[in-house]
Amino acid sequence: MKATINGRVHDLPDELTVGALLKLLGSPESGVAVARNERVVRRAQYSTDRVRDGDRLEIIAAVAGG
Image 1 (tube, rainbow, N blue to C red):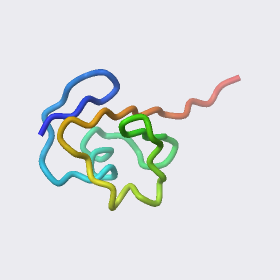
Image 2 (cartoon, helix red, strand yellow):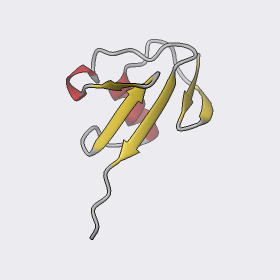
Image 3 (cartoon, rainbow, N blue to C red):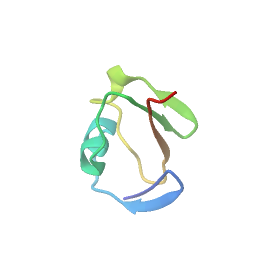
Image 4 (cartoon, rainbow, N blue to C red):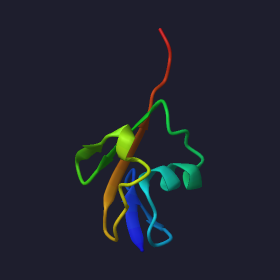
């Protein structure tokens, strides 16, 4: 399947959850926000919410600073 992540098209395995996607990309599950098709995915749904062919995802990591 293909999905767009942060503006770039990626070939991804089928039946991938948001949590599995984060692991695949090397992103931690905490300290990030995920939006799929312009809707925020709640962290509690990372293990059950599935990425679908054609989805558009934005993954934003929190950065500390001052």
